Length: 327
Ligand SMILES: NC(=O)c1ccc[n+]([C@@H]2O[C@H](COP(=O)([O-])OP(=O)(O)OC[C@H]3O[C@@H](n4cnc5c(N)ncnc54)[C@H](OP(=O)(O)O)[C@@H]3O)[C@@H](O)[C@H]2O)c1
Image (cartoon, rainbow, N blue to C red; front, side, top):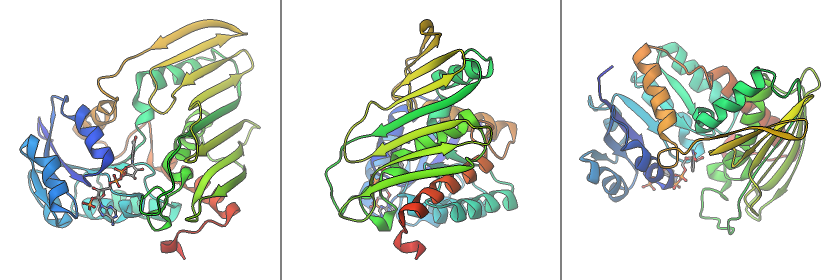
């Protein structure tokens, strides 16, 4: 791998602009190219960094200056874009949710394994120092045996059928946009898939989930109670409850701090202020994997991305939510 990795961004929307603010601080990467259906959008993102703008995705992927690819199109396009990149041997960091259903995730993982090419879900939460400290507390037994976790992630958006957030054709809805963070967090803490999934949702007028609540039960009786919403904001907090204490993680999806309580006494507080929003952590992890020749990341393994997608599928099956491209 080159000393400075050239990235090609597929998509030039909201998230790519936020990511660029942090990405440009990395010393060992540069933006080489941007694809967007609309030339002006690609050009706007590419131009300040001297990157090339493309309106044909395959041509961008064949650019020899593109060493790695960041897929940041709406969810329903992740599989198509990631698989094309993988089939051309380009490593892929793919925005969350890695795909809208488990069948698509499996196809992507098979393509990565068949081509021996790196693939990772951009579940950036896992790479924050705060999340790593939380995992350390849990694995050190600081709160004893972990029995229960709560997580909520909600924000209020006005219903707009044109927005990818509300459009069933782009796999809109709260579950895939923000609920995935809560499900992924529970998976990180408890490991494996839940044995029981009980969930309910309420729909937007466009037919995707405005909000959902669920209870997940894991093999040895551990439970997670999760909530997501695009119809109202929530505290956006994780609480992890054990036999000896508990952990609180405010703004758990991109955390700045976590608190460890033993009994009900505050035992330790860990704080970390990232550069910018903190997207640099996941890119640095990908760089480390690529330089080490690894094909997946140990903090968000591909089999876990499949398992998380299977849990999301089970919830949607309980609500009867089928996206038009799945029918
Ligand atoms: N990690 C995070 O914190 C975070 C935050 C926000 C979003 N995301 C994820 O990032 C992905 C993109 O979200 P976003 O908010 O950036 O979306 P967005 O603002 O709507 O941008 C989507 C991009 O995809 C392009 N595109 C290509 N084909 C498209 C099609 N058929 N329909 C619509 N757009 C198309 C759009 O540009 P053209 O119209 O020019 O083609 C645009 O550049 C989602 O999967 C989302 O879950 C992650």
